[in-house]
Length: 68
Image 1: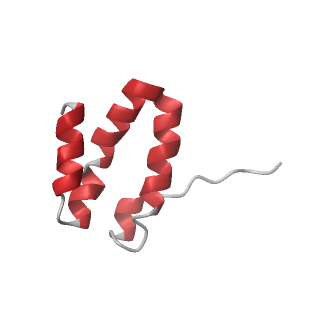
Image 2: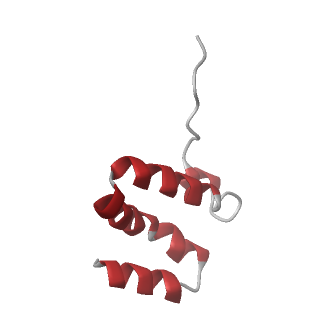
């Protein structure tokens, strides 16, 4: 999906599930411009906004830091 197609799809989304599945396209767009690390951090923040809106089994696990 091209950048303009991604943004158009996000703007036209009518359901939370649609936005949920567009995260991968958004990641690709951010990654192409700012690199994978920035894209990962950005999409991770956006993903948290879906907590409680999509089924928990789709959310996956939260990243946990270990203390040694």
